[in-house]
Image 1 (tube, rainbow over the protein chains, first blue to last red):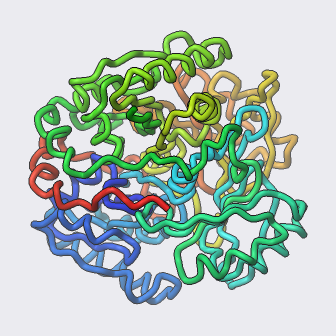
Image 2 (tube, each protein chain N blue to C red; image 1 turned 90 degrees about the vertical axis):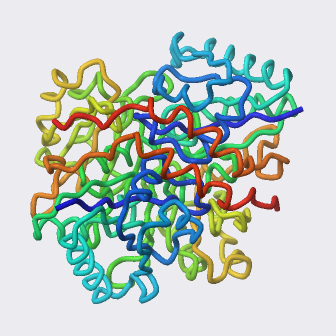
Length: 266
Length: 266
């Protein structure tokens, strides 16, 4: 029996996946992927059967149970099975439920990390999440509890809220209750890491203004020092942009066999 | 004039860099890299001049000023200049100082995100940093202040401490002062993402025991629910392992030109 790889695709464009993740896709038999994963990733695994398990909605626990069952079933079919998740699987990826299902079935698995949305948003904005002297900590938080209640705290110098896009006004109220002042910088980025990302600067007290621009899009909200622009205007307004994808084969193909071999297992 | 790319190499093995980062390396003229970056990455940019700017130590602010100056000087020499950092540049990467130096010099730049050590450690351990129902937040923290004091808080369900490897006993004391109970799970991972990573499970009260195993190695300490093993034994003891690096050219070379083009700038 082969094994299951739970891979972080990164939060947007296909080229934010790691080399390790791309390599596993190229050897896989089947890929069970989230709706949020860039369809262009399919070119990295053209031999595989790609199954979109995201369409039914991940908030439904029945849907998650069906995904767990499908993962086990496909793993028993042999070959390499990939569970491809947007962002990083260990951060709000519901990885625990899938790992436990695989463990119960006795199926070997490995997690390949990815770029999480907060990190991609910081790169897009050119605003580091930690700052020397003033930003010693960054928390990645979902404001939504299992029961659907909205909560917020003030536990780090910068907090990045995931999945809060539909409730920015309520989030602002909770942030102020938790001790953030209304004039704290708050930046909203939707579709971080994608070509059509949008970003807007607010204060905690005026966060609700972001609803119109970002409505209906996957959103992260950065609150605190990490939302503040740097001195000198090193912001997302610069002219820089990613290089063209066409350089990829030349950059990678010849030297790749000398990359490090698989690590020994402890 | 070309531009500067500040790229996260990921925290270990060369294959944890993103496709985007690898592509830029393949087009670069010069690469200024940290000491912690895998030397095997050089095969992705054999045409570039590779300069190790990490050897002098990053805790010295004079050394950082020299790196800033070198970055500006190289950027003025034309071509693509890469600043390659271990992990992700926006998380404890001292990105702010380099972005500000580039902005002052009027040099266009872009940040390419990477996998940060906490995320790689979670993948290595197969223990998600967030847990449905019990882990709504994860904080990435440096326990060390600018003045050299050691501090800790309890601001999230899981906290991951960077750069605390030399002071685990003192960190344990601070954690207990901050409200963590001595029986809270605490897992130490050194060289996360590398083939020779080491991991050990402790409690906050016995964290100091980890000093011997991990001494002198780059270390992250996971405290709280994210350090707890999952049900069913989905731990790092499974037999799974990364695929061989030799699959890389076949996986990437043919389809790469159809990857998404450079995103439009807002």
